[in-house]
Image (tube, rainbow over all chains, first blue to last red; front, side, top):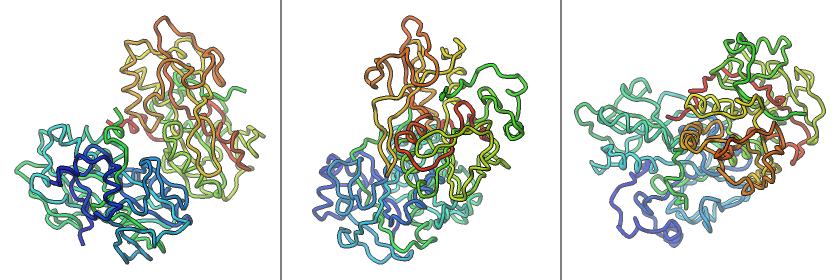
Length: 273
Length: 273
């Protein structure tokens, strides 16, 4: 199972790129299951995790204490499947595919979770690196995994997140090789987007993060470094799934990797300056 | 009662300006009750609000949904009076003065809250505009209320915060007159500090925010505008106290206005780029 996020600039149907978020959500609701990379270009996509209300405080506290991997874009009221980020959306149906977790184990990957829905579920929409990859590209920073037609490589680090109540787990990072002359722009551009993971957590030697071999990512694909490229590591939105695996809450719903929620928010909206 | 934040560059004892945060906390613990404006210059001061665990989710959700007035710097575990932001600190004793709230009413202003402490209290440390006023001054933006030796004026707006559970209330803003040629720098500098209220919420006509008369602030002092000055409004850390008043939780502790918590974090640390 590829649990990674598909990269945002992958070639999708050119019509899908120009869809409004509302159109995209309607297509996914009607049964389209494909990845969301490149869909409704310029609009913010979000990771989804829904947990029972009894676990919502721990989850929100976890996100608050770990804002780089888990930047919160919205939190719903218990039982609500709507969000201020997308008018008329239904979080139970409008993603292309979901994952259902019981006691930390993945048990189903349906395209609609109305049958799994519970009245006590609180949903968290969490920022996604799709947003900052557009900013990197716009600033002229080469995005190697896109150049190479691969998914971004992701690694479970040896760096624990700060625990919150019953939730704990390692930080997951994504890695993008950056040529030295573009390093400053890459750091600046992502720093200005704190709601979508912000500045890198580390540049250079992967062993500092407990990563033994860049060629063996835990999720996604390995990517080739050009000579002189510096590996740059950003906190990654796959972290909540690593937390579910490590902490084993009795129940959780998430989006399926690469099948994000399309919001009506524009990527630019999350830029601080 | 002056419920405002004293301004950060007020003239305090020059020794206090050079204190380390640890020294400042020790002095306040030992009984010093004065305002913290200008104390331990360069270190981040924080608003404090402690609520029973039963209200902590609502409070954290309120902050998450209203990050401009209520940017969370840390949240403690229930009953804990320590924080990762200040080594060896005791949140029950290390502030100069506190406010005790019952059912939304202010009932005491002690210098130590050990007698009021409850095992179920969760404490929130929230960003403070003291941090960004240093950044404005460093960027050459005149800070009128400091020039005029006054506290910053604050206004209860007609703009409701986004409610969270049982918590609701209006956004409170602070106002600083900015000469047009400095407006860009003022917006840029504060945009880069999203953890301490970030960019202004409004520039210009106060009536847009439901403010009838700039000369009659709800907290703090009126400030004189120079010709051409534009009134610029930032979300304000007094908002949580307005929320306590409006929502009447059975119990809460806060810092007393102008008597903030001194953290070991440097102001620079909250700058995103």
